Image (cartoon, rainbow, N blue to C red; front, side, top):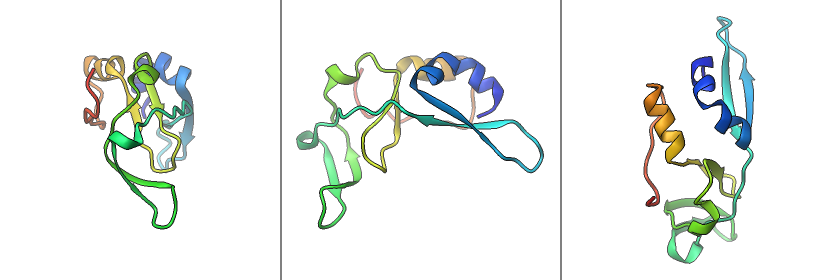
Length: 112
């Protein structure tokens, strides 16, 4: 992330994780966001989940179903498994759109 994106999203980012500086060859100031808000809100029985063979560790989720009451007020979160993407709420998407931030794409995985 560049400083323009951090400025636009700072409240959400600060409340939900940490910004880590990246080393660049040209001295450009770049950061990566590490989401620290981990919520166990996945409804396994209603999701399409593949496990690591011989384990109960989640490898891939093709379709997500969440316990809505656990995520309804969250702006950013991850699930408690290694391959979890970072999920964002409408406010985050709206800020990215309003500030015309580039380099990020969104896929709706739950209604609301």
